[in-house]
Length: 501
Image 1 (spheres, rainbow, N blue to C red):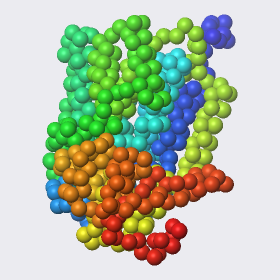
Image 2: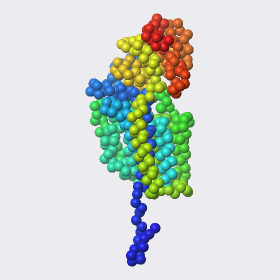
Image 3: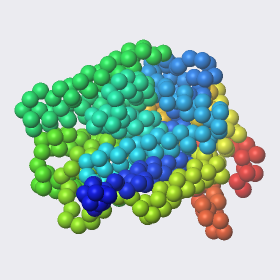
Image 4: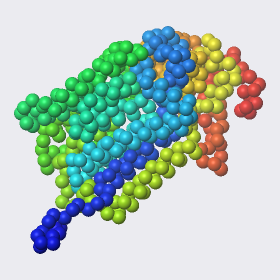
């Protein structure tokens, strides 16, 4: 459109005022990210991170040896995520569990907004960034766990934003310091920028000055990250972690990618979008980083989270639709409605956090643990053999007084303990495990070979599973999915018997 001046000359029309559609969707995806992150916390890994934060605040020092277990008591322990632990405990002391959930919500909200900005900057056709960002957040709905991973995920998105020119490179110094002291995935920043630089070099056949400069900032930020209460040993932590490959091979998130669950199929959809973009507009800037992180995701499921972000961002420029020419720069009443609705949606998500339970303990054997506590089997030198999820719960409830068999710090425990856990999970020489640790009681999930084996042993008395209330009000109680086995000489106290007639 053009306007006619008083002299009869045509002049360019001024752009329409108003909030652009891209900005409205920035708020919308930020609200979705908040909704994902502020969920009730049920991740067992978080419980130990939080317990460690409380221990740090209480003692004013970071543990240098294991304070929780009898299987690795006193062994050297590098608390790699000490900063995240301190933040969890600090937010809890200031705002309660709601504060922690809102912190997680803020991390996810910022990540979601950045992913949208990165994809929408590369494609003005609204449906391309809309679909790509939606795919990333659908994966995030199940894989953005409420633990230090969220700090690393936001750091990863911020590094991409620096490469894209959204943020000044100097910000990488504080970003990388926080990342180094919060989560061991910080080397992925170098892999990301390096793969982008290699793609740029193959594309242009000249030295990638921009990426090289940013890689220098990343390296400087990592080195500054070594300035912390634990010292430079944090920088070596990822190498030590990879050296424990045998201990990690049966951990779900370290296993190779499989087509199982909605997130896996959504990720396959992103790979298809990536290949489609290459066919439409082949580019080394797209091929190298997309291929590197897709391979990383195929090798370990935990990398799907980062790979989904990379695939969405690098695919956006190459996906061209022949229809749906709505632009991110469009304005109008519908855009304003979207903006206001997104703001209200975010406010409701934040406010609803205050009226729901901050932690979801539904998957934990709380009643069984209470019974063991009544009998004194969680005190002193008493030993209970249990799965890792119980160990994380006990570290939360008992802190440094916990005497756990194992929790999910699989990179930390001696290999013998990991092997013994696998025996009890998948079958093997149960007798050797029992003889090695001489437990006073066993708390385990029902229905497996371990329970059947115990029931055949005269020296062990396997109690009937407790009756627990159904998750849906009004439905009848059902049997617990956990059982307790005691040595036959041990008799439950009258209080315990009375609590479960």
